[in-house]
Length: 291
Ligand SMILES: C[C@@](CO)(OP(=O)(O)O)[C@H](O)COP(=O)(O)OP(=O)(O)OC[C@H]1O[C@@H](n2ccc(N)nc2=O)[C@H](O)[C@@H]1O
Ligand SMILES: Nc1ncnc2c1ncn2[C@@H]1O[C@H](COP(=O)(O)OP(=O)(O)O)[C@@H](O)[C@H]1O
Image 1 (spheres, rainbow, N blue to C red):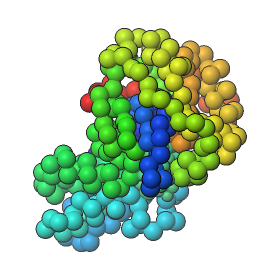
Image 2 (tube, rainbow, N blue to C red; image 1 turned 45 degrees about the horizontal axis):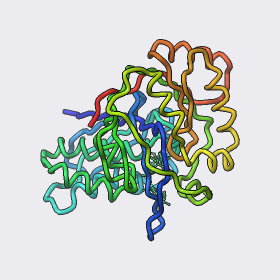
Image 3 (spheres, rainbow, N blue to C red; image 1 turned 90 degrees about the horizontal axis):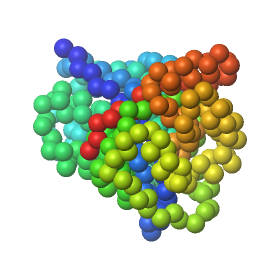
Image 4 (cartoon, protein in one colour; image 1 turned 30 degrees about the horizontal axis):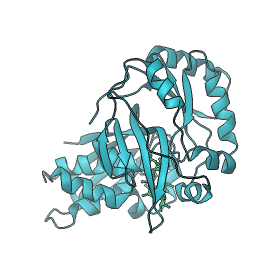
């Protein structure tokens, strides 16, 4: 019997770079939330060595890379380490999220692999060990393992509760330019930002966007420099009917707009699709489960 896991897009509502570690990694303070947009991972047990097939609109973008380097296969190997499970079966990754786009698609896939194979192989790995494996796979993988709105600190491995979110619509837009995260961190040359002060809850979208407007995504300026299309995308999102707030997520290039409802977001995305930009556009809602 096959098993399925969903790997939701991660969106950084703000991202402050607060410092830098001696090893070059940056200290962050960021509010990560998850949207309905998602990759899907399917596992079919078999006695044959583990394989990975890529499907979906962005599957071809990963097809040229060695399968063993895919974060899904890396996660499977890490999970099996120190156990007596055989690395067998067939994984199918339905790649619906744009690659290298600031919404953590690869990180979400790696995290989904850990959840899925832990279940499929009946490992019952303690959450602490899963989080440690996740951190070895990438700075964003621990938050994607939890897959609920979370405040991230450290390099991404320190997870704390997020404010309670209001019901909120979201539009995601990606211009199609893949962005390498290290290049964005390297290009950043501003002073470090302080940590944000956040309330326990945002009762309305207006309360949330008022606070977000006082915060920043410190990776947005370097990303706009390396990928000028981001500025155009942000202007277009801000001008959509009903848009309450717009910003870039993570290291880019995906940008988001926040709306008072999923319905408002859907109407705005329909209007945007009529403009026929060659962009990936998604509309839906923000997941409201939190740590
Ligand atoms: C920027 C963020 C914000 O959520 O998201 P994305 O843009 O990737 O979605 C993440 O911190 C990305 O996490 P992730 O994509 O897992 O990064 P990793 O693979 O661990 O690191 C890629 C490279 O980014 C830089 N890096 C990453 C995280 C961090 N806190 N400081 C860094 O300086 C390092 O140069 C590192 O070699
Ligand atoms: N399953 C995967 N999905 C996406 N990217 C992957 C995957 N496995 C490995 N990668 C590599 O990881 C890099 C970052 O991917 P991704 O997580 O999509 O970036 P971002 O976090 O910026 O959205 C890509 O350039 C790609 O080569």
